[in-house]
Length: 272
Ligand SMILES: *[C@@H]1O[C@H](CO)[C@@H](O)[C@H](O)[C@H]1NC(C)=O
Image (cartoon, rainbow, N blue to C red; front, side):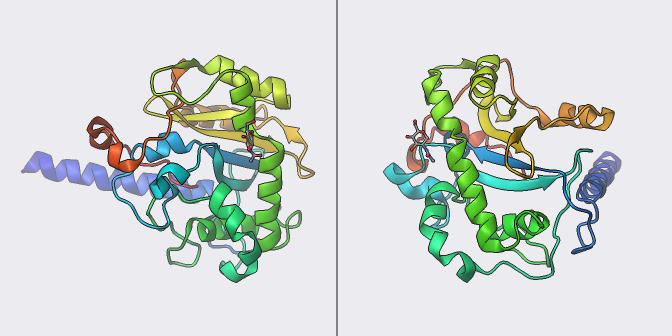
């Protein structure tokens, strides 16, 4: 009894610390509009093969459930304004997401910026919403004055994504989706460095490549994500999660996913 209650207390403490850290990192998420201008952009793309193999149930909003029409290339996670010190602004506007503003982009977004889960992420004003609502409210609203409105935020992210085609770069270097191969992380990083002349950040889940992040100046010229700062070096230790050899899983439709993957489902990296 005593041990389970102290375990509970520890857990509560850990959650409280994590919440406080997240609030600190987000730089006061409820300030809405009072946060200083960001320093650079980070485009994060995600690998559907890695997300989709842990799909447990299906719904219409989850692109993993599209079977043979499921995405077969990296899709957009978000375009994030960041600070050089490793923190970032969040929730910079009091106005909420309005899907009508991007109605002309929806088909394109469904293809290249789909949700890969059935969850409804949190939005900025106490509610939950679509993946797009989350990305716009939490990150997009902080990209002013470079990007001024919702429509331009999504359009800009698509354009950057089309221009820096990570799938194409990896394919050309021989890193093709496979459920048997493992590829050297260093080779993947080099392929992207050679193509874009900057170093990507790479995140993994269970040894599989999950995300590639590319950084840009405000004029969308590529730049390094990291600046020389002690704080950031500390953070990168927390962030990177890849072994020396990583897999790039091919898509397996949820019904066919191996039970071992379902059993070892890990929490998704929270959409920051
Ligand atoms: C990226 O490149 C791949 C392979 O070269 C191509 O099939 C795909 O259409 C490109 N994706 C985008 C978003 O342009």
